[in-house]
Length: 253
Ligand code: NDP
Ligand code: 8X3
Image (tube, rainbow, N blue to C red; front, side, top):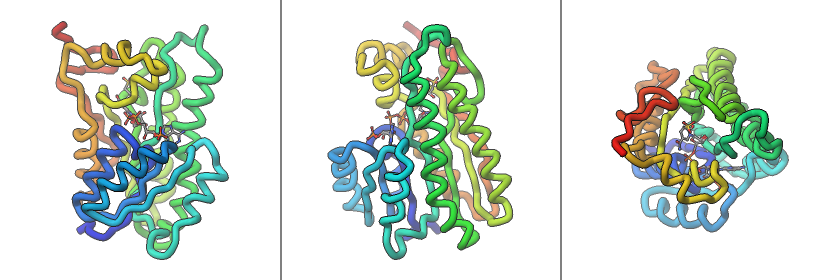
């Protein structure tokens, strides 16, 4: 059903975005992969090209002008994006609010919230004009429950939850489906970024239980986009079996 459709995935240089682009490519969708790291984009694109047609767009979602110029540079059929996966994002720091860093707060609001809006603003017009499309926003369990020291990251993901609902309401008339996927603990580069390159600290987040893999989330995204056209998966919370809530994890060691 989706063979030949065009999907744009932000944050496709690693983790959930990369795994999602791979599932799409293997199922015959044409993919536009986005991220800041050009060498990673090329590496992923070279791999995906054995399955499908691929375009790369290199931009920082914080830079509205670059986002617009990049997406506007798409030509011909590539302009008609059928599926947008707003995945680019990260946590920066894990500090209590009283000692949090402004630069971390700015990064999380600018990337996770404003970046998602900047990309959506460029893609939505071609969907409304065609009365079709599917937007998948990657939220988090952190957008459902606030946890200690999560403050601004949680706020950014609560914003994704609200924006997903808002998009679904405003785009309802156009037949555009809007889905939120809200994962719990997924082992990716996420914690390395959160802890600013401290690999040891990052590794501990995923020890003593089996965390989700990026591929598990990619599968759920595929389930949502591949559902029959009259079915709109609105919101999926996906946790490792060992995780009961944001900070309740059954660790064996
Ligand atoms: P990764 O760190 O592995 O991937 C993050 C991706 O986002 C990378 O491809 C990165 O690419 C891109 N990115 C980050 N900042 C920017 C930016 N300023 N401009 C453009 N692209 C950017 O983490 P995940 O795969 O885990 O994270 C993907 C999404 O899933 C995020 O929104 C995250 O909040 C969410 N999530 C993750 C969970 C987890 O436990 N891992 C759980 C719940 C939600 P590049 O560096 O090349 O720009
Ligand atoms: C990522 C999962 O629990 O670190 O969104 O917030 S968590």
